[in-house]
Length: 112
Image (cartoon, rainbow, N blue to C red):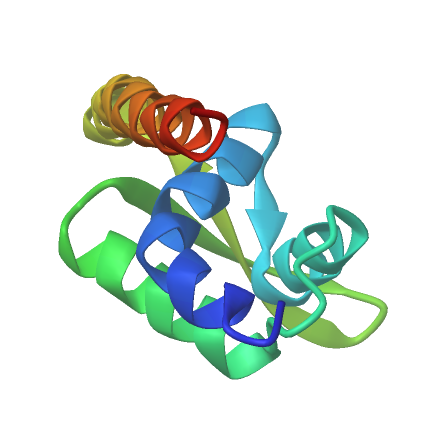
């Protein structure tokens, strides 16, 4: 599964939106959550690139906080972000259905 990370890059934005939807959070915490979900090849730089893109698209609100003498930028979903997350899951359901159909057709062909 060496190419898994490449396949997931297009999906990571939606997964990051999903993480942010659960609670206000910051980049390093998002990276750790992704790694805990099994996205082992994901690094901070990838997450921060996604966060910058989400911010530019006005899907998140940000707030800087100081905790233990560390400034962290927290992200929360706004209404547009919630709508985008909903649309992401709808797109995922559609793509997932297409892939499952293709897999079933391939399995049927191999068993003939």
